[in-house]
Image (cartoon, rainbow, N blue to C red):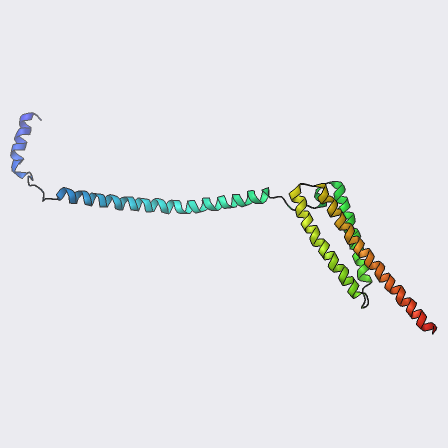
Length: 188
């Protein structure tokens, strides 16, 4: 098209153009509407984004928690006893444990109404020493195989055996005294 044709086209459409001025405040109303639509779009977009990210954030938080628990659990020292110190200490613990078990069986076999109180007292003392041993295991874990703790653990085992053996001796003395009394009464 040439310029003359364009000029002619504009001249023909001259009366068809909307040349009225908008009402006062039109620009302000237009911008307010535009801004409100932008807010709506951004809130919808934000809602869609948060809906998308919320489950992922929950999964990520769960994974972080699980990893933290696994790492914390792995980094904590397990409570150690003599068997964890060395193979020799493992044998020592096994020896003491089997000796204590044998002495307890002997004590059970000696149980009767006359010895019941003595045996119960011995078992109470053994329980106290066992609780002390549990505390020593914690001390051993914290101290990193401190020899003083190891010796205290061994002494704890020895004390338990001593209590059991002394109780058995005491029971044997009671039996002998009863036998002596029975013989004395039968001779009269």
